[in-house]
Image (cartoon, rainbow, N blue to C red):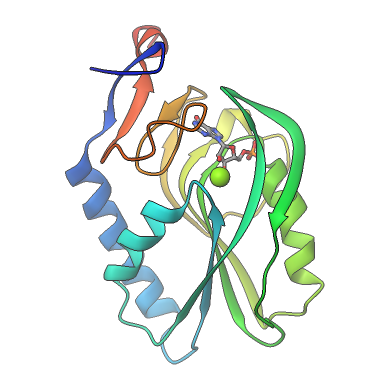
Length: 181
Ligand code: IMP
Ligand code: MG
């Protein structure tokens, strides 16, 4: 049990489980992108820890970059997605993998994907550590998913509650919501 600001959280996905699943995802990517020189684009802030864990396990010749968007206010999606830092690389003709911490309503991906597509990459895939299937309102093709989770609020491993909790080394769920299971 951990208290972040005024809320209590309990473990949902332990560190070891995250790490071994990320190894499997990396192996898949090592096979799928062999010889293709892909660029991985993390969505800040949430994806930084997932992307760094993933990167340690990639054996590809590859690049990394980031963009920054914001949609969440405290514990729910605001529905409005603002892009705070755009992509500085030219991705025309490149194999691009967008890396997300979590796909919730899907609005962030719905906003970001067309902007990437406009730049005519050779291919565009989405890799997300977590997916809240029941919450997703927009039909987004998710190519690689770490874990499907219930429509509950989670933190840790890069994900935050009002800016805090990103430094926790596992995924934790709001204690009140864990009891509802
Ligand atoms: P979407 O646009 O609704 O799909 O939301 C995507 C973004 O909202 C993610 O990249 C996260 O930053 C944030 N988010 C969604 N669900 C959670 C959660 O349970 N905890 C913390 N952040 C979340
Ligand atoms: Mg995010």
